[in-house]
Amino acid sequence: MASESSISHAATPSEVVTRFAPSPTGFLHIGGARTALFNWLYARHHGGRTLLRIEDTDAKRSNQDAIDAIIDGLAWLGLDYDAPPVFQSDRAERHAEVALRLLAAGHAYKCFATPEDLEAMRAEQRANKQPMRYDGRWRDRDPSQAPEGAPFTVRLKTPNEGETTIPDQVQGDVTVRNAELDDYIILRADGTPTYMLAVVVDDHDMGVTHVIRGDDHLNNAFRQLPIIRAMNEIEGGWPDPVYAHIPLIHGSDGAKLSKRHGALGVEAYRDEFGILPEALFNYLLRLGWGHGDREEITRAEAVELFDLAGVGKSPSRFDIKKLENLNGHYLREADDARLAALVAARIGETADETLLTRAMPVLKVRAKNLDEIVEGAGFLFAQRPLEMTEKAAQLLAGNAPDILRMVHDRFTGENDWTSEALEATTKALAEEQGLGLGKLAQPMRAALTGTTTSPGIFDVLVLLGRDEALARLNAQAA
Image 1: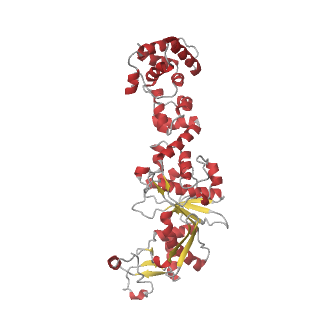
Image 2: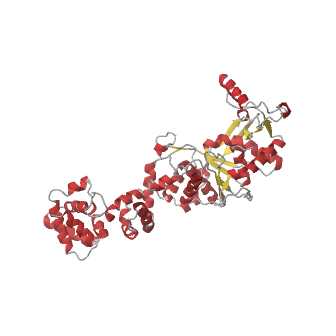
Image 3: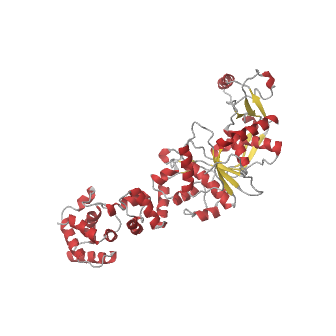
């Protein structure tokens, strides 16, 4: 995808425009994926547009692999965007332009405090147990008081009296006293813009109307609004966005989400856990948003139903077992040929997609992820002599070889190699020998698959085919 440094995405009146703005310092983690999903759904629900911005201004930590993984992860989840992604690093000149306009209009000022000055200020605040914030020492001073040619930063002149209330669409009305905000830097001494300024300028230039993000950004909203309102005073056309700050995701134990809870990149759920994109889409949708008691919601239904009113105020809890249970539902619903291709890719060169497609209706019945299907399909591609699990070997001890010889010889005369006919033949043999069906089926399963768990034994016989099934039975028969 191409980047855009010059943007003309202004929203039409009443059009909803959302954005997802990840920092490419790591892969697309589960919390970011949910934020992207909520933005995408809100825009789609309201017939608006949703945009992608890569906030790559931290050159030391941003990397192309992370950018590629984010874009790939979003595409895998089926989240498409209505314009090429904007790369924030391309727009530094525009950000600086806004900073200088704020400076010229008196909404910002030059700060000549040196790093040593600021460290001394912080040391004094620590000693006096005061809040750690810039004390405004250059807010009202004449720049001419600074040494000639001294480096300076540009700080925003934030309101320091009264209070600001944000009518947040998730949190409700949130109020902060303006005195709690400090005059923060919007342009560094080297002329580069800060994150807080860049976000506001990009949101405006992209025509973003609704800022939907994690509630760890709620404080940022109070710091960003003064820029918006100052620019609206200077040139007009800078309305306050609608804010919606979503509670963060916690682990199943209620603690902050970490890798031990499953806080991994989206690609890990695809590649390592064998999760389908529609399952993760559905799970993330239900992680902090609800519509009655419904658990399984299709993409089309989600677009129809989603709104911010359904987002809860409390942190949601990530549970990998619930995700896998939901994934099991989508595996059973998935097209067999599609699953066969996914499973074949995990098995490798020995896989036969045609055979996997035929086997999929019985392989996917109890599976909760693609790897369980791979494991269940192992018997299809095993080479003789089969490697036996310890439990399977136990089932082949005692009189099992004699039983398998009887089964083999009876099946040799079977002309109808279907599960129904094979089941009827096996039951008849069991009755003749005065044995329960399990006494035949258990050693048969071990001989045919090398394990004690598999699809139904008669399905196994059909999938292996007459020649291979008879050969495996004969290999273990007396």
